[in-house]
Image 1: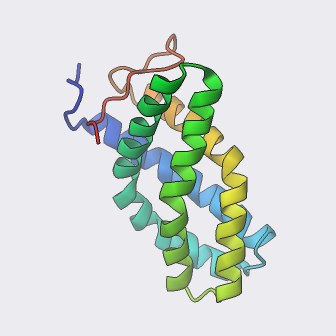
Image 2: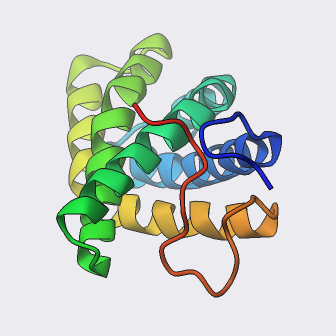
Length: 159
């Protein structure tokens, strides 16, 4: 079992897998159906996002786990876990997403629309992503995650 605070390869792999898959699917849906980007622009954005998501997946997991621990100290309820997931997703992902869209040539209006839409939708996306990430961590057999735990102990370092 991993000691809390140590880097865990299973954790990093699960976080990376979850981030790449989830971001590709949800990002494309938002870009094409909400912000009006063409399929080609969205595909370029999603393709560029893969290495970015690989790079940010584990740091996001660390950030998310920190916010989950902080939220849990305030209230151990499931609504606090959902709120913590939502806040983590919006705060961490919005600047990254804006940079990706800028890099693929999206216009200012498209970027503002996509990032704003993503931030609003992230209320749901952050919670769903948190559940998806937890499921991926269980699938990858990350220490501290098992089917019986509804609030697993995060394996990342304190921030």
